[in-house]
Image 1 (cartoon, rainbow, N blue to C red):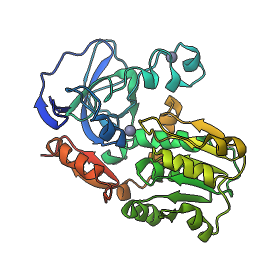
Image 2 (cartoon, rainbow, N blue to C red):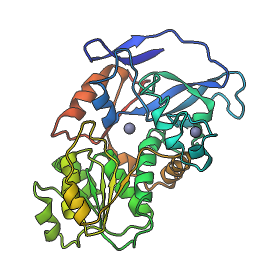
Image 3 (cartoon, rainbow, N blue to C red):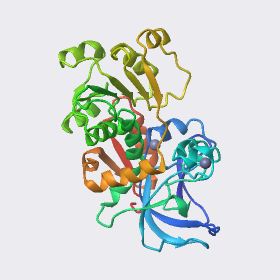
Image 4 (cartoon, protein in one colour):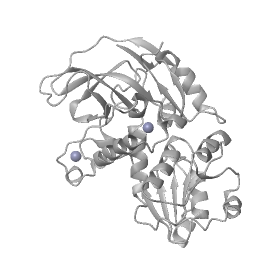
Length: 339
Ligand SMILES: [Zn+2]
Ligand SMILES: [Zn+2]
């Protein structure tokens, strides 16, 4: 199998690895498309050499291990990148993200185990979700980020749909969160983004978009009421403090983006305005299923969001393009069959 692995100097290199035999319960997948996630860009700096990224992928079943039922070669699937025990108190009520024996803290594909930056991947059969035959293959690779957004949007599902909700960050997760909010009925979604190219993509998708160093004044220009909720998808402590400034009193702050470093938050404002804070980490199995349904319904603008498709050999180049502050890219997919 050909994989992109992190080299000794943190470079991304394509290497040939021997195919290992499947253990009971495992399935071998031919990866059709795998998304490059912002998390991968950060993790390249910290993972140990030899790691294989890729937690946003879809593929075709190639080989079935012992004790696997219900799947056959040729099935098109999305892969839930984590396993969970199904038994612990969190799993029993459908909060698999917090599984005490897995979930997001356990064995995650592309983080703790080799992921989808490869022509084939070995996954637990319990992680497979069938994709409709009619779904274009690139869409399947969006299941994971859409699931993140579905969960983020669900945290404000009980609010009046007319109330303004601000999403910070027009990267893939921010834009998809905007789409998920609209899909659940929100009629007043504003997206705040510093990068003009990304803001433009959000605007073309019909969102009120603010591109400004001083969002406080821009939102007034838009005539928006103070947002009742802010969903922070940029992973920036500054953005979180902007959110605290902009939020209505007793509003809701939902944190999705991981800053990946210790951050200073304006706790005084948080207390004085009595802000409700929610972390949203990943997605449950139900969210993953909902993401596939949303993709199948055609409301996810995959065509507008994919700004690049690269081969395994060009992963390094794609990382560099996505890491540039003024990147014009939204989502780059790796297509292992491309050369
Ligand atoms: Zn991701
Ligand atoms: Zn569990």
